[in-house]
Amino acid sequence: MEVHFTPEQEGQVSQIALHAGTDTEHVVRNAALHVVEETARYRTAVQEGIAQADRGELVDDDDVRLWLERQERA
Image 1 (cartoon, one colour):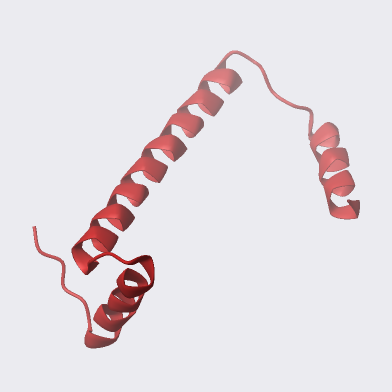
Image 2: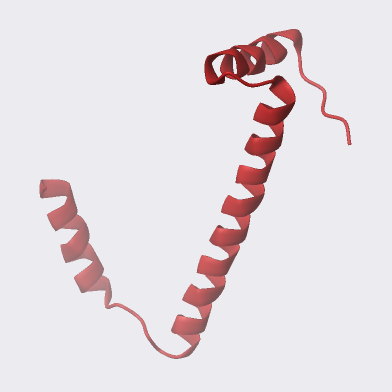
């Protein structure tokens, strides 16, 4: 697999690698694997939410609004 970057992007990756004390390949590999892991977690969470909704385990709209209002005040 090949990944192509603009010179500016390559420079940014190089700077990250330099500051991390590693090489650019390591930085790119870790970033790509992080995206894969986060995507899998997101899809799992969505599927769990759909399953909960299918079982009728929903939160009332008013309860959600109250929770959001409390979060904004905090």
